[in-house]
Image (cartoon, rainbow, N blue to C red; front, side, top):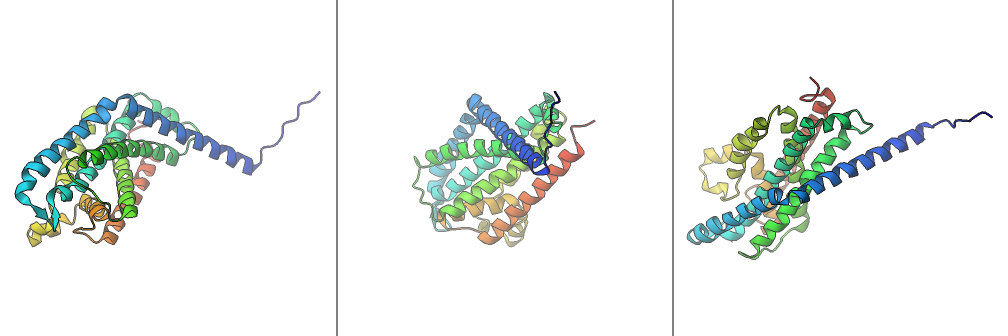
Length: 272
């Protein structure tokens, strides 16, 4: 009695590969979400405490002396900036640490030799960064409500800007992790590049306070567009045209996503 093997059609193979990648994506996202919950004392609590201190020191103590910024009470003015600041640092930090750990544990190599596409791997880690960033953002927003009232002027702009920003810095964290060879390499970019860009990105002040020369220099900072785009969504005020903000963020997303895909295909920082 002979056994008959049914031929696998091209369409069936594509559906099977698509199903494998979908399951793989969901698995990576679940793993990343579980990691955020499992070590919540490290992933959620510290940034919330830090942002609370910013609200107390800059908003309550210093804000009383400043009064208003761009016609908005100073506490209200810095609230969107602090929320965006927490999104930037946590989306970046989550992916850079998680992806680098995957490299050290050789877990990443197993994913690369599996049928998973590079896009699936990238999107899975990016989703993990977004989960942590949005979780912290929600809690920081709740903390902000203890200090001031926040009325969202443009809900769609607010949500889209914060999600795009989380994706951009999740990709930046992934690229940082790809090039990192030791734990010290993980902290170089956040310390010497990300922190200065964030603090000078209009979180605590309007660039209208700067001299014309420094205003032009400030426009080279991509964080400025993200902070002001989010501030426009929440308060309706911004130093930057919202269309320009969207364009800058989308350009950075496309460039960073493409870079991450190319680096994974080349095996940069992975294959020696």
